[in-house]
Amino acid sequence: MKPPLLLIGHGTHDETGVAEFGRFVHRLRCRLDGLPAEVSGGFITNARPPLGDSISSLVARGHHHLIAVPLSLTGDRRALGDIPGTMALEQERHPTLEYDLGRPLGPDPRVLKLLAERLADARAEMPRFVTDEPPAEIAPGETAVVLVGHGSTDPAVNAEVHRVSRLFWETHAADLLTVETAYVSHTRPGVPGGLERCRRLGAKRVIVLPYVLFAGGVLERIWAQALAYGANHEGLDIRCAEVIGDCEGLADVVIDRYEEALAGGGQSSAPAARRPSTVLPVTRPFPAGRTPVDPGAERDAGLVTAIAPRLSGARETGGAPLTRSLVDPAPLDPAPLDLEPLDVDAFEGETFDPETFDAETFDAETPEPEADGEIEADSMIGAVGRGEAGEELRGDAPDGPLAQPGIASAV
Image (cartoon, rainbow, N blue to C red):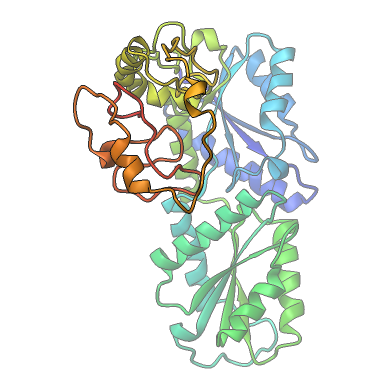
């Protein structure tokens, strides 16, 4: 027998929403009876049955592994409630309990299809709010849609509703003027703001499409806001569609989330020791005694390994010390330099006169440094402020390349 399906609903004081939730749980029991798998459901707050009672009933019947699916179109934890925290409390009450948490229901192509069906019903059958006169013929290009979500204090959740609006417009309402986004509460624009935008864009008919699962208080607030706006704009045909509701299409999406979590695609509550590790070992070598300063330096391990022999060769040949390492911010210990003592007496009594100084004569008398081979200046990359060969210098770069005997390139 497969693990039971536990449907999690956010609490509501509206009896209509609670009743529709119960009917949907019954529908899934009939659908999953042939698997076989039990189905139960509960609310986190404000409604019965509480989620804890449903879990206790399943555990009492011998189920210690559950598949929990939140009945939510978005991943808004503020609206649905703290599911991981609630389930953690239930695991304290039932130490043998484990669960897999499925993904929210939207945006799913089947959910968008259900919205398209509600929109088609509203265009064909729903009367206008403001007047009982027969509606005039209005072309699709003069019809707009306001898709209304719950609204959240989390900007990412609100952005997800905007994404649904765009997907719905391009996949199911491309012939309409526009699909605007509005919210019932917590953020802007509200339903009147969405309707006003459609009116200013030239819409003669606007259909309010609730992005809501079940009827109840939220739907009533959407209708009330649309009716209040329509009372002051009698020339605009405003209609309101129904919610997605208890239907076979929604049951298909929930069953898909159940099967996905059952196959390991959900968030598991099993201890980490029981799950395969997802941490991949680092296979690229680092120089001995060195570790990355941060995780981002790990991706440069191959580069560090490639230049390490050159750095070692530079130290052995008395190269100039690097003041900053790609691996460790601590400066490298410079190799002792064998410098000739400066003969100060040779300059005694001489002064520098800029008017008589001849740069060409000075350059001709200055001996060139000995080197094993000629190095093109453009191939040198200074230790500070240099990019790839041929790039312009940055503001912090020196006028010329920094000389480093024995190193053809510093990076």
